[in-house]
Length: 430
Ligand SMILES: [Cu+2]
Image 1 (cartoon, protein in one colour):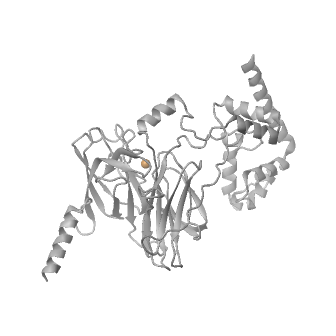
Image 2 (tube, protein in one colour):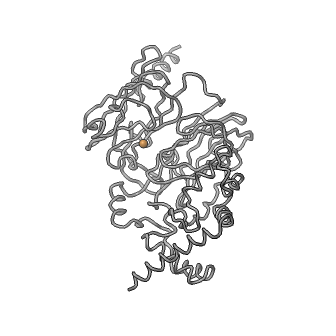
Image 3 (cartoon, protein in one colour):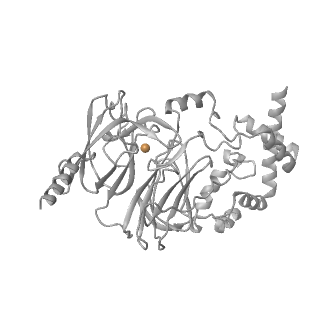
């Protein structure tokens, strides 16, 4: 009996001391949260740096709201500088949006600001500082909003999978370096060796033309990530630190992916498990089965997976430029891991990616066309009709198709482009 009472007491004080404390509830329709903004130490396993967190940790807490309730969030600034909290994706009065100098003055050191707003939506969102470089320095957390009515899909368990691109340099230093030299952090610079390889493969003229065209833009084909040298993290953990979510075989698990990176896009897969995407940026979508998906900065995707076997699975996130990757694990028991895939080779940018009409097609138009369904297609445009089954087609293939569809026009455009390049080369050399 005494044991039970002391257990209860312990539970009670844990609840009171809990970092996100629900102080009062009026019915089920109002909740109060206390959040502190704190200097923290971030240890990625490869480097340790001082950063900023919420309630003493980075990432901060997962805030759970209910659709239809009013929330009151007291944010206390324990930093020596101004801070702010932006509620990413939430529909709320502008005074509560958390953008300093626009919706309010921000939160001064030692001050507490009370955000209060109604929750009128549901799904996966996140919050982060909107001051200086505090967000890339660690000031972010997750928000889960339970819907008023139940979601149109079933799951037995859920986890937040929050990604970031933690860098050993402070955000302000990264910005300064990038302003001085945009390719400062490009660890995949093309070399003279690459030039010789390309010349052998594509011919000397074509290779010189290619390098001149890129040089003209002060860019290179490997310019996919603005910043490299970062450590990818899942829920604050690197590959070695291995964030793990436990499941029982047969369960449906809802994974709430959030990309809280400053810069990195990630390609995400779970080898051996098909993912069903059920929600994007907090909005439920017609379920789509995928083997892999790309998540841009600040996006959220909810997927459901159903591991049936009594074994571990790797959640693998590879950055778009392939300079970093991180795995987490879904496992039926602690300590079990699965194989971690090798990161793949990085892709190269093409002139089409730069919006150049070089091959008669502009990449941005192409993306629109790929997503287009038949009903909205212009029947007079043969290239578009052909696009119908091309969803998974490589860009080069679709380009060939486009070229076949109107060779005269394409070659005219190509000539015009090449002439421009040659003229510029000439004037540069004169
Ligand atoms: Cu945001």
